[in-house]
Image (cartoon, rainbow, N blue to C red; front, side, top):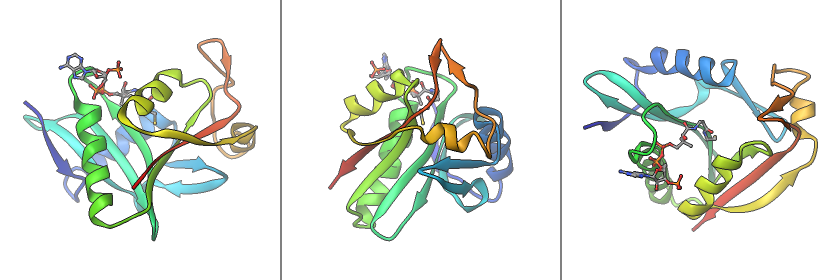
Length: 156
Ligand SMILES: CC(C)(COP(=O)(O)OP(=O)(O)OC[C@H]1O[C@@H](n2cnc3c(N)ncnc32)[C@H](O)[C@@H]1OP(=O)(O)O)[C@@H](O)C(=O)NCCC(=O)NCCS
């Protein structure tokens, strides 16, 4: 059984390697903003020292942005446990909302987050085309052109 622990000095470099593997680089671009991995907080699902999943997020004054979520043993509740941890930490911080950006090709993520209680609140038309100028993002995924950012939020 896995446990959820905070990203710390001991696991941070392993998580960073996974982050780069998953998201092509050590930074994210959402809504035109560059967010460096080194500035992010996170939680990790571990079992006997093995990383089974991780979430990263960025704290702003009144909101939290989830910047990545990955699970390596899907459909076992790991994604949910990581998300709930960040939501709880955010509620304790008394933020107005937790939000995240996904892209128009990621229909699984859209379904997943909406089932958990997130709601779509913004569409950034062509945002990925802009991001592609500074970050390598595939043009197509699953035969869908990756072009737009979709923002989902959970308000409190
Ligand atoms: C999205 C992602 C993080 C989900 O992780 P996960 O660990 O599979 O998440 P969970 O196990 O909590 O939930 C996944 C599904 O399994 C179901 N589930 C959870 N525990 C279960 C169990 N014990 N038995 C059966 N189903 C279960 C959940 O209800 C959920 O169902 P749904 O997809 O129909 O909504 C994972 O698919 C992933 O890494 N995707 C690639 C990266 C990505 O797209 N990230 C999100 C965009 S930022």
